[in-house]
Image 1 (cartoon, rainbow, N blue to C red):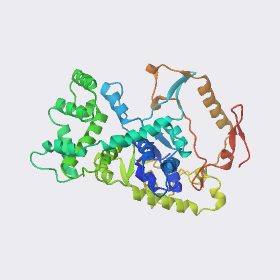
Image 2: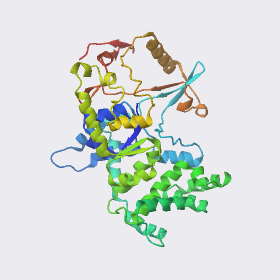
Image 3: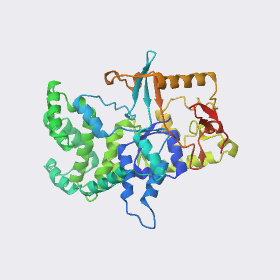
Length: 428
């Protein structure tokens, strides 16, 4: 629950496990593919002081949100779907996830999301279990990073400044928008396809479709493509204008986080590149939060709740912190004011788990039947989450994270028996 947030790796690295628990509790985290890849790539880091890369990756995997998180589809997949005309990309500040299985039962349609490969990987990494394929990918990522040549981009993009270089980031953004809305939209489209390394056969098909659909503006024809294209063009022009240094190949990797901005309400980072550029690509209803500011607020939340009596804390975070504090000195509370129900401050029920009520048993039975007896539907009749009568999400979460018990004892103590039925077992 909470606003959708995207964080970069450095932000999560700055948090301790207790602060990371509150991040997971009060936000829905959009886990970008880049975060997954960057975390994995740490396996190839050269560390001193006797530290092991496996320890670094395991620690980061443990802090990664596991309860209120969604892995976003890779931007290349989204671009391919949009440019081919196979899909319209929903850019309404929420994650785009894949892997859902559409099922039908009794005239009702539902979607079952099972544990994603990314979630399974993070679970393994916490135990220092890495597949050989993952280690190979980490090596390849480091190798590809060393092949980035920003100096070449600096030279080639000088041609965009025949009358003198841009002086500020705002000037660069104005130039990008001016170019994207220029009169020769075919030239703009072709250049964008080349800049994003779209394969030649796909470029030909895209141009053919663009012409057949009346040569719309590229903003209308392919909104997500336009966003990614504008981010890349901004970056290269900022390099050409000497506003972004060209000595760090990792800048190109950091930039890719901005490809996913349409799929969040809040973006947080301490990276200087993000601080300077991200605000130019966020909408009016989105917020950039410096990583240090978020950490400070999560630390403040941790102290606030740690002051509660022990017997109350033992009831589990979900029982005493279903909503953030009403005190608007908390950043998290202000973000809830901006993005959540306007009545959340008044709607503060005391959450008491009641797993064996008739309504809950009926709901559990419906979910079981839907999963066991539902019929998978053909691809052409699949639905999206807005159209579903039911949505089921399967995942494994830590009952405790850091020093915090997340759920009440009567929930933590429930286990499945050999028949797959839930039953109470003594707490360990």
